[in-house]
Length: 195
Image 1 (cartoon, helix red, strand yellow):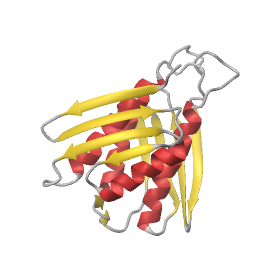
Image 2 (tube, helix red, strand yellow):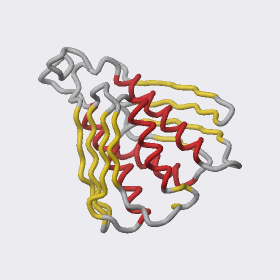
Image 3 (spheres, one colour):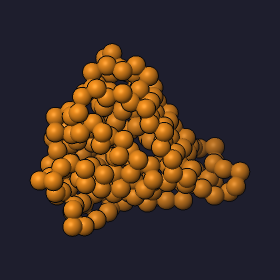
Image 4 (cartoon, helix red, strand yellow):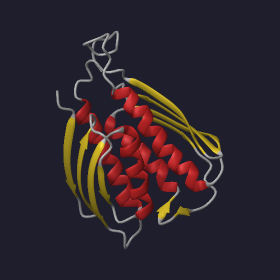
């Protein structure tokens, strides 16, 4: 079973093309026009072992908001499509990830119910050209478009670069665990019989 998705989304604000393979090896080509955002998404692909092809043309002359939020919408949609009916997967994933002085918690439930719980005390307005307030908007868009329950919490704050990078990597590891195949069931992991 192939667990891939290809999404094209064009609005007056952004043009996005994304291809995602949940069973990849961490190969990526990412170009959003925001260097630090590219770096975060490359870390997501590499550490989750997801193959990711992504090109974004956004209205960066306005600001980074539409580019980052719309990328979250498209990535979440791709995750939902690639996961399919979610039969035979673990459904839940979690990771506590260290990055130097920072410690990040991420927990994922591919429940079909969107929810974001987010706690991260960024202390600067930007990392590179990426607005730190857009991190929450990105993960909100991912969680709702993917219909996933997503919890992100900075357990030990520190350098803002480290916090953001730890968050994207922890999300990658938790999602990789959630979409992993579970040999003990061929059905969905729910007493309801569907997700």
